[in-house]
Length: 194
Image 1 (cartoon, rainbow, N blue to C red):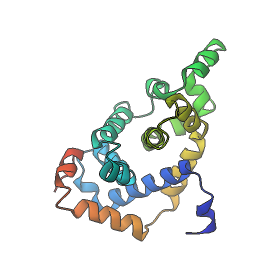
Image 2: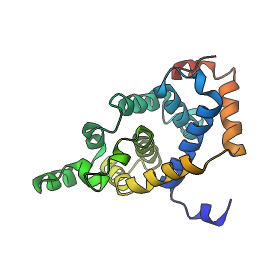
Image 3: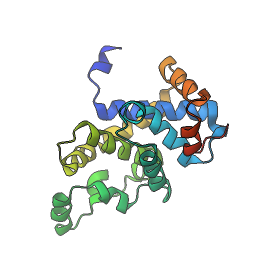
Image 4: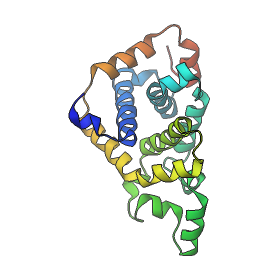
């Protein structure tokens, strides 16, 4: 692990890792997924594997639901953004004439971030992971922390998509998951073909 890795935020690390799994799955096993929901959810399960397989604190269906929600509209909708948006700030800003989406995305013309389904998925996955990691923190506080890092998350995804070729850790974990006979029921649940 390089020195720069030590100082990365968890927001950045989750975004990078999930994107790496997504790219590994796309490149090696793209033809085995029923659809983009299946592919995206599998990347999420791989990144959240400790939560899913060890702790059982996040269910595969929860991750599938996140992917379906994001991809059902093709981009992050006002409703999906508002779902996690802390209500007091939204109310105050609404009174000033701004929408929560404007606040989260920074400015109205930032459609690149808004239209990226992978960003929408990873963003929502991060909220869920942090809710598990900090069970005594109000969901609104967790969501506001993620919203404050939305552009950081998006930049990490974009940079990883542009520069990632492969790394042994992600390649091996992806292969182990996709080739495992013991995990067949989970792969069926995710919509992975044999």
